[in-house]
Length: 90
Image (cartoon, rainbow, N blue to C red):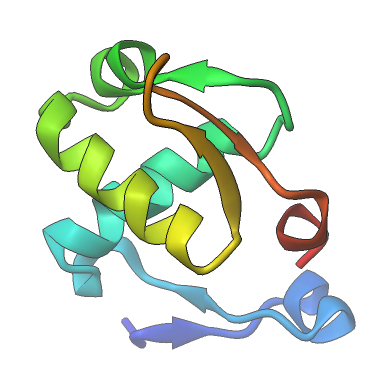
């Protein structure tokens, strides 16, 4: 099986689908978290952690990283995050 599969949908949208077996645990975690945030609603760290089985501390680190580069808005006090509309359209 190829590491990268180009589907008809991907060709149309310019996207590549990478086989799950080639993804590192870190990339899988990042993918899980961003998938939750794609709905453009506010999500709490405990909610994301429970949905992804990723420790809350790691979820917070990743959310801070995304916020640092303006991909999301992260409320440190309430520990909630929401994706920025510019990032969600990518």
